[in-house]
Image (cartoon, rainbow, N blue to C red; front, top):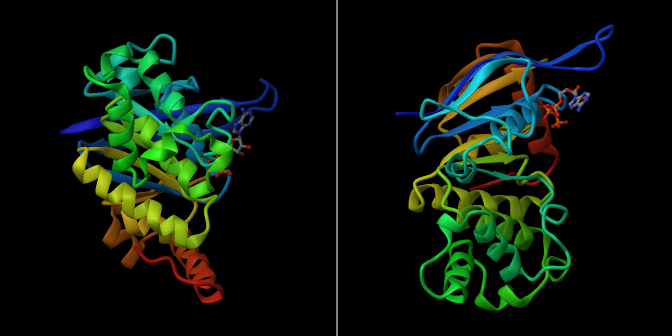
Length: 262
Ligand SMILES: Nc1ncnc2c1ncn2[C@@H]1O[C@H](COP(=O)(O)OP(=O)(O)OP(=O)(O)O)[C@@H](O)[C@H]1O
């Protein structure tokens, strides 16, 4: 069953005299419990697509639907659809309020979405969510500044899970982390998608990372999807020269440093 359906999406930035087409007719589906990797070099339009899905950017043309219902902009979006689609951003520190405890950060998600709040003890529910993302219960009383980048990203994921989403949009969610921490967070996401029945739109410039998590891959270049297919096929036998160039660049990086392993 198709969960997310993006059709003919177009986003233009800039003035009328000098328009810049950042997203140029993108169509993409994500099925329930499927992980789709959206890859491409910096500036290819990936984040702009993610922002349209999250309701943070209004497209000039095209549609984004979730189970057939239009995903309007934040503010116009019905609460249940707002809940269903959660974002995990690149820089976990800047997306967590430094003055709040981790328990308060997770509790705020329930204030925004009361229908997702636990019936029973909230403290226990926070502890359970922290355990889901591999953090000890004592993290609840700490603040983001007390935690490592990887721990902060686990908290961001716990906050997203707190409202029981169906789709996680991860925008460069592991890019700011050390390679070994990247691998841990990727493993966590792979586990969570199974245990929490999540679909994911996983955005990354790094084909090596996408390879570890995606069922299907769409390759974006200059606002357009130039190649799409099962991850194993696209990455083992890319058809488009741009995908081949991205793969070569990723292999060169592997040669230069430690490989990412799941
Ligand atoms: N608000 C904006 N105003 C003007 N141009 C923008 C705006 N947001 C993005 N762009 C431009 O649109 C293009 C696509 O940006 P986008 O962030 O979607 O790409 P990306 O593939 O996610 O790259 P990155 O990984 O570097 O963020 C870029 O050239 C960017 O400079």
